[in-house]
Amino acid sequence: MSAIISVCTINALQQAAANLKNGGLVAFPTETVYGLGVDASNEAAVHRMYQVKNRPVDHPVIVHIAQLDDVAYWTTAIPDYAIALMRDFWPGPMTLLLPRSSNAGDFITGGQDVVGIRIPDHTIAANLLKAFRDLGGKGIAAPSANRYGAVSPTTAAAVATELNIFLAEQDQILDGGPCLVGVESTIIDCTGSNPVILRPGAVTAAMIEASTGIVIAQPTGQIAKVSGSHSQHYSPKAKVRISESATIGEGFIALAEIHTPAGAIRLAAPKTIEEYARELYAALRAADDKKLDSVVIVPPEGEGLAVAIRDRIQRASHG
Ligand code: TXA
Ligand code: MG
Picture 1 (cartoon, rainbow, N blue to C red):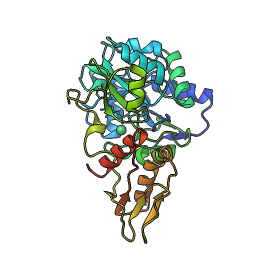
Picture 2 (cartoon, rainbow, N blue to C red):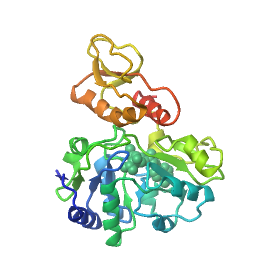
Picture 3 (cartoon, rainbow, N blue to C red):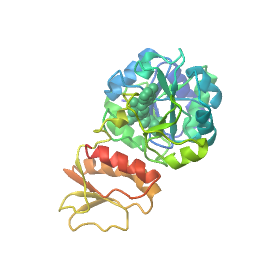
Picture 4 (cartoon, rainbow, N blue to C red):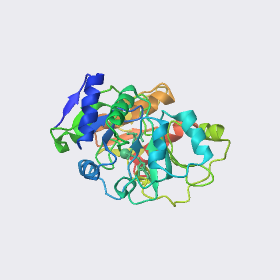
């Protein structure tokens, strides 16, 4: 059991930062989804976070940092195109995989030679990271604040519902309202001569090519253990089907312009692609809250953020 902190004053964030420094777990909002934060330099605390998530220990976790100066602490060789990406899209919904320094322990990289780094774009996350840094903290390791394989939470209430029974009394959940992006960050492998997208997100392929002036390469499968790349992930308990037709009692998620099949239960009717991303996970959670057996989803068409939405829907439907 842990406390939801609903008034995230600077004072409350300083206390949360001290909590992290003492090995506590602090779930916090980012612009993408809520993260389950822990001191990225504290092996014991990272282990407890893995237990709370029920996550395999060889699975790497993203290190969130306060500012660009801190990239050098965690990494070694940074290609020029990665610097362009940092300048253009941080703070923002983008994680870069870079060759790790000796400061990045096996317990956060899953034993791989790369480390995942991100500067999130959210006032509460930014102020928490800054307060943590003021206490000498180097980075906050944070996976999405859900049990392994489940849907990422986009509200503090969703974090509490999912994790509260696994959290300790000292742990905290910071409430920053619903996340504005709603799907996880774009993960870009920056260890080769060209950037490679390992998980699509709000920083799109076109944005990456425009920023770097380099063509994106296709994944070769050399970097393993990107959990979002497992075909079954982001799944609710309800069975997810991709279709335009639904039967009585099935959940239904589609753009507002697509009307609800007779007898189906509308779970979301986003008007834009951005709204679709923002509402998708809450709609999948609503299906489980309503104890529906199945959910029918009509994926959005098009490029950009729609690619990330289709990717998550594909995985929610078990590939
Ligand atoms: O938007 C996000 O990225 C959210 C917020 C909280 O920042 N975080 C998130 O974390 O989605 P997580 O752990 O649920 O997904 C991150 C993915 C995982 O699939 C992990 O395997 C991969 O990033 N990853 C992290 N560090 C890595 C590394 N060093 N090498 C390869 N993959 C890595
Ligand atoms: Mg996750």
